[in-house]
Image (cartoon, rainbow, N blue to C red; front, side, top):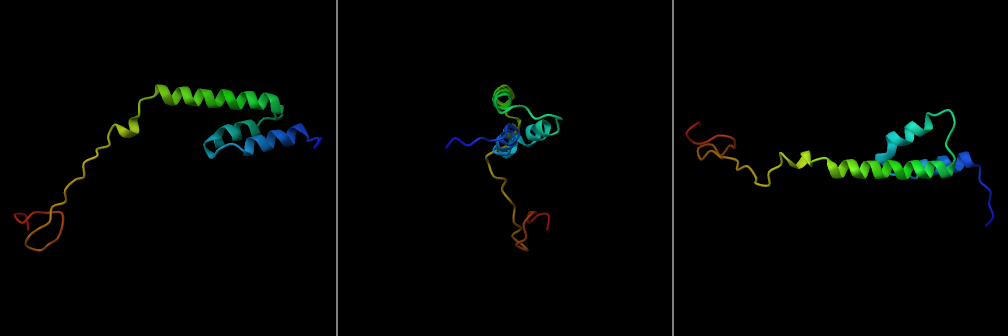
Amino acid sequence: MDVKMHPGLLSILMLYSLATNFDSFRTTIETRDVLPSPGNLKIKIVEEYEARRQTEASEPQTSEAFYTKTKKKVKFCKNCNKKGHSTEAC
């Protein structure tokens, strides 16, 4: 197509095509006085992706550490049919 695009515009398009989990990275790059060239930005995006991937692989999965798959049984009172207490406590 032989379309010439300003390097700054191409850098902005690249930044806004990133997934939402790159919002902090995008903001960091945008607050600079001078935007990196598209080639340099591509390298920075790949470096950021690799750093995040290595961090996720090395961190233990703490979100699953306290998760149990068994459901807690809710007690129902046989007297009043309300949940949360037993017949003895009614």
